[in-house]
Image 1 (cartoon, rainbow, N blue to C red):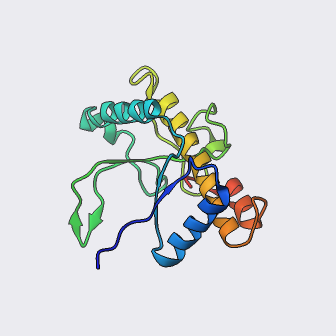
Image 2: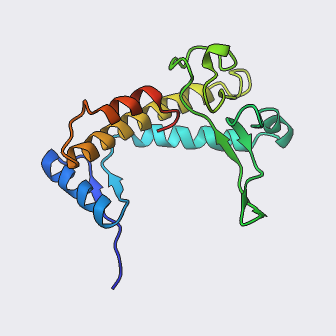
Length: 173
């Protein structure tokens, strides 16, 4: 028969049912789709527009932020799948080492295990940084909520050690 991806509505007011649905989806399928996640369509549109502007920049500009051996965050367009170059461009960024988005990206305090962010200047793309950080934080909040619901499905609560570690140590949830 045909498999259907489980769809879980996080806008539901019945948390016990959401916990049950997530636990079942994780144990039976290993994944699920969420709807009613609470990230506004306006923010999603703004994020997509800023990404469009970023990826439409000249190649030489994007290459100035290329990730490398000493920093895995930044622009890249040279990933391989089965020894063939992918047809994609990416920007890898995450929560700063200081956990403070207002600290300059290249400040040594922001360097963490996977590097530091390399984002366009405000002069080049004035709304890029505020938009992507707002979107990142909205996704991190959503990820935390989903992790809590998953933990509850395992009989844990929102103060479980694993959740504390995720909150304190993640670089991109």
